[in-house]
Image (cartoon, rainbow, N blue to C red; front, side, top):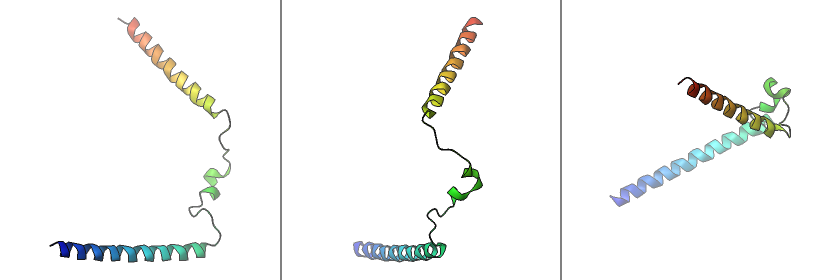
Length: 85
């Protein structure tokens, strides 16, 4: 029984190695055909990203303001709910 399991695992390992080798070969062929493209999904070239800026140094301030705003809304809501009683 143990010998049969070992043989099946060996066959699976060999199959996995062959599949990996084929996929690696196809990937290399595709990358050679594409030329010098660094980004295969072309995200940097899309219209969506073209005019966007990188995050500025005060981005943390927006996060803090958002958190303070949410906390203020929660406090006001709690205050209004307790005043109704």
